[in-house]
Length: 380
Image (cartoon, rainbow, N blue to C red):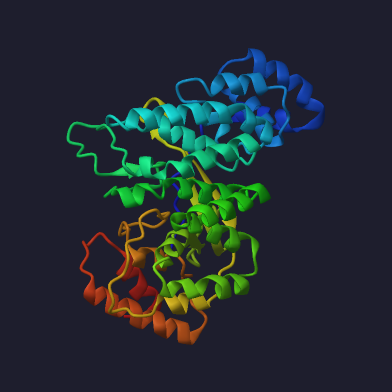
């Protein structure tokens, strides 16, 4: 399983990098403030990113201005987690979401600005931003019923997306209802702030359903793997198992081939992985990747390999990081959790049998590699 994130260096990268350092680095902070106020383009962006990451507040008026712009400053503030940034932009996000849902109640919606709001919420845990999450939780049924406008001439509008990397092709109300919980799950991967953890528990206790996803992800990130398994694996025998699968779909076992000669993004191991942001050709590109190393009890893999003959649930909101993926597939979620080499001989035998049976039951296009990859790793 190769990691190929398709990332490119942004134009003006040196200026942004330099002023990011100025915004964060003590003695240079004074010189960065005027740059934020007066300079244009990438230099200004770099300053704001620096202040956003470090939580310094001199640029707060700029953030309040940017969030009211066309892209809502998402190219600058999406990856900033400070309370200073969060408190400035949360009221605008709340107002915008409220207006968009009112509009969406009566007609199809252009979802670009809706997604900018979601992008900006990432990892932010200030009191005002928590209220934005509570607003979304109260309005999940309205979100579930949204319809969107077409983005190209033959668009049948059945697909939906939150980011360029989080999209589904059959956007039923049941799947759209999960969107707020997916955003909170991504936020916890970016920044497992205790306030976001408490919010996940609060919303799950109040509403249940898809809010189990961020609660489960919080546990994966913060608790010993044995405790996580013992607490949540009993849910595999309940209707709630689907929410566990969606959270597991945001995990990925990073492993490079032994002869890999290119840059490695990190050591082999399990990561929580999200591709955030979006792009419009020739207009904007706000995409970036967030990852966090986690550990998963091996017993999950034995459980997930049970009943290869049975019908598997759809797993829609998952992170895809392989070539030739089978969208919405339980088996795609499963293989993404597996290392290239499995050391446990019993687990390897179970996986070999599981994927052999699945490959006989599930017919896929030649370009879909999930069962080919499994046969290569575990044997036919």
